[in-house]
Length: 183
Image (tube, rainbow, N blue to C red):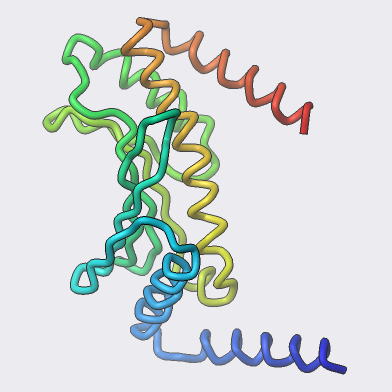
């Protein structure tokens, strides 16, 4: 009986959320995102006026990056810079590696900013998905984090080891296939 009441309340909450005015969606998703960070007890900063949160995570061993989680333009966004201040002589290879990732990614984009010399990984999901399934915020955050580690690894392999983009992608695909087989 308690299970059925719980399911019913969950369903009523979903119906209530999607029946609201579309302009209220942003506030609900924002509040869910803030709650997610509070409950997780991560090292983060909340910027209410801009509706974005900055969280520090370890992207590689002993390397932390700032991850940005925002709500705007009817979407929940996840962003992180995976490479900063890249040498200009690597610009062509960086674009090639970014294009390889963008062809493989089901969710998100690798964006190269030549003027500022950085590469970022950016994902977004519609408010409605996050209203109906509030747990999607955490799922999207974790997915973004896990993929960002692979992208970070790849771009650092390019810069530090001068590896060809096609070989980097081949190594990454092989590594991920082995991890999937071992799981």
